[in-house]
Length: 445
Image 1 (cartoon, rainbow, N blue to C red):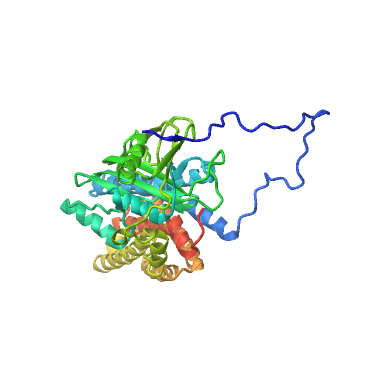
Image 2 (cartoon, rainbow, N blue to C red):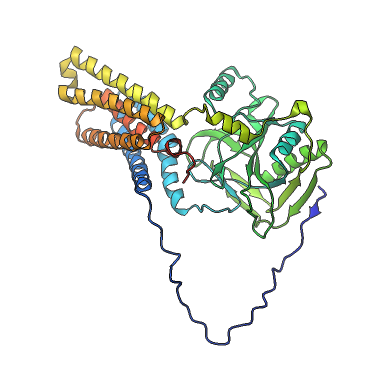
């Protein structure tokens, strides 16, 4: 493709400062910038419960495998262990590590919701949001739906009935601490496992790319070639094609084909050419160039006018649904109440069957705990941060107690194992970043 080259400044700015005339000395500044600021108590508690949840789920996974392989529920135990490992244990472990070593400044990569490096940023744009919507719509791209209860249900229905869902939501990636403002995609022959897609983020006011280049939008374009298993988490996910430059150029060409007045320039050596892996473990490679597509002033025909994402998000905030982690916590709290009720029924019908698991007093404690979890969840749903801390504390105490008992027990009752697993999963769900942002909107680690 023919592009307008960026200004060629390869040698840097000349420094005219004279060299030192005396031997240099090293002196620390009065306020050493290496001093780590103190964390608020609430942030410390968040971190403590986050780590505790990670340890407990790995502990639970070990117990499930060690006691379940020679039981009638062996297959279920192996499946439960895979679910715990793939969807809870490994992501939480990666999230703990990523908080330590993954930088929070711009390095040309997006981040997944657990803080792992995601897709590379391989496209920049100038223009208003409405300009981008107009260009992408003309080029035959479909705007992805937001991830809501309704869209989640549509995903399930389309998967079961094998119906196309061109507006299917894309997973969340983060840049500048914010989830993508919107995304566009194209299904391939109605196959939901293959699609072109590109995510867009607005650039903060006054922010510049390395080297001083100024743009208004950054984007990450990749091509999903199939559905497979994530190398890092063992989750079922889309697999990304390695040649992301081909997808980047495809996005540009589809837009320029219908919007020939759009100008294009490129930053050569924006980064070194590299081959790496994204958050799903897929190999990706790029030549290190960053095209800048200028859509400024592109007029939108009235019938095609698209509501800006900022307006849509503002409207959605007034009736937004809780994050999936909180919804999962509610389902698991009700499941725990059901398991407790089943345990009581078993105790009443056959007193001897629970001789190794729980006394009448313990059953009362289990029932009270289940009701307490449901009550605290209601307060968390109402955005009370104290209720979230209390809920994590109750879950921690109960889970540790039950796991210690399971370790010491010669025989394990299946209902007690399920109750323990549910308690640990509630702790994992409530200590997640999604739950934290729900009670404290506007903050993100």
